[in-house]
Image (cartoon, rainbow, N blue to C red; front, side):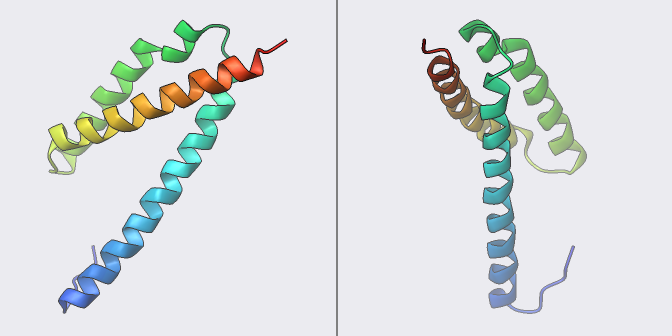
Length: 97
């Protein structure tokens, strides 16, 4: 991690990371849309076992990186909930006859 010498430098680095985070979330979102095409039902879209796996995985990663696992779980829960709704919509729209 870069050792910043000023508050302005810290803020610039944070801005760069924030941009990368948004770009990564966008990539994830596009992959979620693709995933809808491989599923056969709304229940399959919801994939509760997969969600539980993801949440456990990111909690463990947070602990390993010494950041608050509850914060990471909450962030991912919000993101996943929103993306599941998006995927359900994508799934329903792709199955219109």
